Image 1: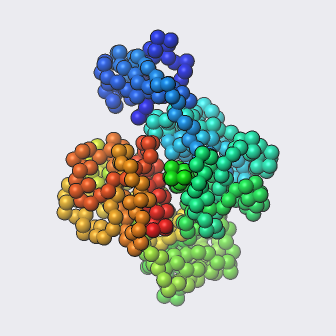
Image 2 (image 1 turned 180 degrees about the vertical axis):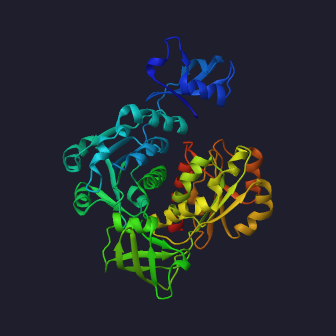
Image 3 (image 1 turned 120 degrees about the vertical axis):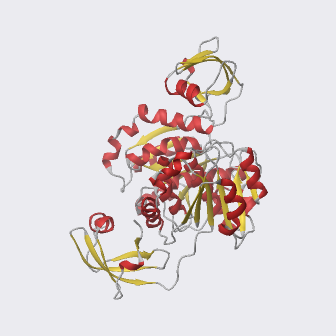
Length: 245
Length: 245
């Protein structure tokens, strides 16, 4: 944990908070904090700040918190992801939040197994702590927005313009020659939406529909990657390109 | 599996091979191959080729193989990695091979737990099938070379020049400002060696020693990533920069 994430209702008006559970154990056992020590804290979707340890022991820690005036900006890359199998998705949540993603839209596709949508990996009670774990790793407070779409076509045709208004839409495709850096170059203040298909790829209809709705195909080299590896690689390239745009 | 990887001694002189086990099951149950069908094959560290199914059934498949004349080039990025905990390392093997890495040097560091070196995740019998799984995913045949170094200083001072002769050495560091793309720009025919530290980072001595041995520090943005996420992100950026160099 490189920052301790707090929910707004955890902190008293006086600025005091008492941490038990995972965070309390982490502070006492891993960081071995002592009274007087400072730890990095942050509010979910709010500012970062500093907590001064006022008491520590028995896997519990009391902090006196102060927060900055500014809130970290939302990561400028969004993800449209064909739902991978539950084991992969479970692993991805924290990694996506750590890499930095503004919103995660999970969608069906022909090559997605229908029963993946019934899994508890898609329950907020499951994924929210995993997303927060990623934020705590990466020192961010901006929780990715999550939406789940069981039907691909209505998502793309009817809902996508509302979910992702202005920005560049890209689609990794083995046949493409343009690099993601070229596609993103010069989008100084815009957002980027990355579409990542299922293991077997989008089918022709899905790829065409995405292209008709403004997605530019970009190359990702000759290697075929597993969904989770591809997401991380694409997010790294997109953030890198945005930092140079 | 996007290519079926074969060991040299599996294929008869006549070009025939009979696959059982994981590969046989994958061909019969997932790809549902029928006689006459072609599948992509490759020799470990050798050429890719085509196998024509001559018989299929009962989780076993016979192929008649032909191979190309050329061998895929070895990926031009190498990795010097402070050994992560076994659970993370187990997951990394196939992802590293899929991303493309010429050699993997695993090293000790102050913030690496000593007992990680005793784990069976470092046994060739464990990691070799996982590396091959990554090659089969990414359609490559070049098995990463693996070396394990229990002492950091002799590795860097005495062995590194032999293991990595010519090329650019980079070290991801939160304090750096140069991007990995800038560090790699213009190394048209060279190799790149990426150093990735332990979860808590290299200590000052280790960082200095790497810098004294030619490692340039490069920035990776403000986010602190877990080892496995950082490796994939850095490999993506290094390959991308090389493709543009």
